Structures are given as structure tokens and as C-alpha cells.
Image 1 (cartoon, rainbow, N blue to C red):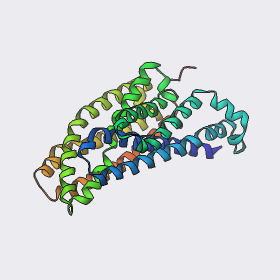
Image 2: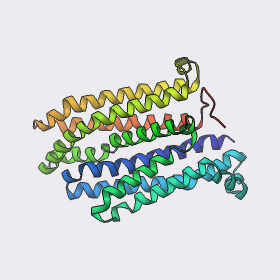
Image 3: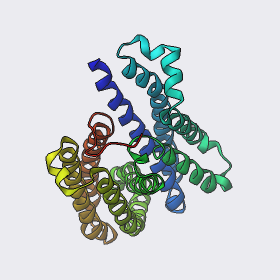
Image 4: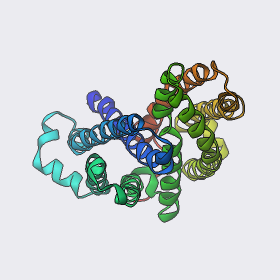
Length: 296
């Protein structure tokens, strides 16, 4: 049924969005809490909650959608036989683990302050691991699973800074503390992003190489061509990140009033590009066949 061919990637997109909002917010808070004002911490908690609830909603729909996709009609989405069959697969285990992680993320702002880094780290690990036990991640066993966890965690570090920094940019012109906070965090984030981006490129490249199996497959298969488009967008994103680090962040620290507005424009563009990348990723993981088959 064509309906399921559309809805399953949309649900996967929701899972990715929830994961990056939740994990990104947690990691951002762990790394930069000492630089944040009370207003920034409140905003970050709100973003975390939004990501967690998007993830919870997506996990609730994931198994019924898989059952409907298997049965080919709407009735299959609520048929106990199909739902039981789906829950007995790696998709069921992945969904349960993801739901647990997103519920932990939703309750995290209520955790005792002193335990947040530990609870946050565990939450990030649980959510990331849920993506590593199903689908393409199982192709190479433990190796591809670890590559995906590292890749997703590094991407979350990067994407988790977008909304908090964007908010600081919007306030920087009229709020001196906001400008100072923006300059400090952007400078610290540039250092963190250096190793995070390097690790995500290496882990993502290794994962992609394993999935495609050969360089030829990148150009001769639909999966490879969509992957190439994704790689091109990521390269553009890296270019914007380099511009931010080597041009805009030094301008901010130097007191350039216009730098905050320019950084906000750059972040807005990055968010738009990320939305396209996540859409392509959802298509790659659900709608296109791998150049080499998954093991049974």
C-alpha cells in the first residue's frame, strides 16, 4: 500500500528529529551549563522536552506502521498478530529501547541537579543505542553498530548547539549578557566541534563504505546516488561550520555587533540543510534497497 511507503519514512524522520533534539540538548547542557544564564537553561529544557515528546510519539507509531506496512492495509496496523510479529523482531527491541530513552529524556529536567550529567549521559547512550540494534546498523554486527552510535552522538553534539545559539543571537543586539554568553559559548563550542566533526566524518564514512560495499555502487545504484546527495549537503554544512568558526566567532569575540546577526543567518541555513539531510536519511533507511543485502 503506497500509504505505508510514505508514512514509515515520516515516522523515522520523527525519530531522528526527536533523537537529535533530545540528545543534542542534553549534551549541550552537560558541556556548557556553567556558561548559561537561567533563561538559556529554561529554553534548553523546553527544547529537550519537545525532542523527547516527538520521540515518544514516533515510537508509539513505529510498530503499528511496520505492521501496516507488512500487511499492506490499515487493519494490519492494529492487528495483534502483526503487532506481535513486529515486537518479536529487532525493530520491536529498538522501539522499546528508544521509548525508554525518550521517557528518560522527558523526565530529565526533574532529576536532581547533581546527578544530571550522569543521568544525561545514560539517556543519550540509551537513545543512540536504540538506532544501532535494528536495520542497516546490524549489517556488520558490533562494528557498524558502534560506528553508528559514535556518528549519531557526534552529530547530536553539533546539532544540539543550533537552537540555543540561535536564541542567543536573537537576544545579543539588545542584551549585553546574552552577547557575552554567545561569544563565550560559541568560542568553546568551536573547540568541541573540531573533534566532534572529525569523529562524525570518520564514523559516518566508515559506516557508508560498509553499506555500499564499493565505490561503483555510489554511482550506479539509487541508494548510492541518494547517499552522494547527502554527502554533498554534509560537505556544504561543514563549509558553513568552518565559516562560523574562523570568521564569525572571532568577530563576535572582537565585539563586532553585526556578527550575531550573521551567525543567526548561518545557523538558519544550517538548520534548513539539516532538515533535508534527515529527510534523505529517512529515505535511505526505509525506502531504498542497499547495494548489498542485509544478512538474515
